[in-house]
Length: 113
Image (cartoon, rainbow, N blue to C red; front, side):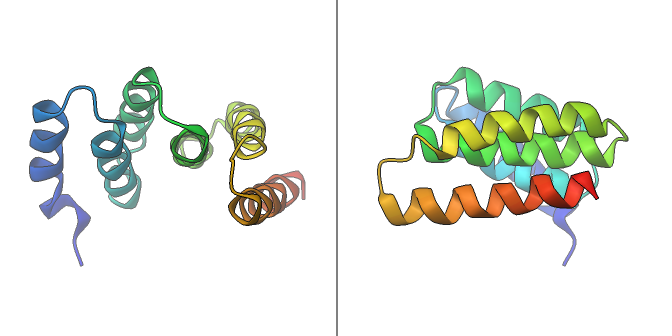
C-alpha cells in the first residue's frame, strides 16, 4: 500500500549494486509512486548512466518523463518521452518494440491534448 515503506530497502539495493540499472529502475518506480518526483528523476539519470539496453532505457526514460510532467515540467517531460520513443524503436523483440512504441505514442498524444 505505502510505497515509501520499501524505499529504504530499494535505496540500499541500488547502493549495493552500483552498476545495476535494474536496481535504479525499481527504486525510481517506487519514488514516482511515492510522489518523490525529484528523487525519481535523479534515480533515472543514475540508471541511464549504467548503460541499459533499449527496453530498460525506455522504461527509465518513461519514468523520468512522468516525474518531470508531475513536477510541472511538461515540455521537458515530452522531450524525454520522445527520447523514450527512440529507445523503444531499438528494442530487438518485434512484439515488445511494437507494444512499447504504441504505448509511448499514446502518452505523447495524451500530453498534446
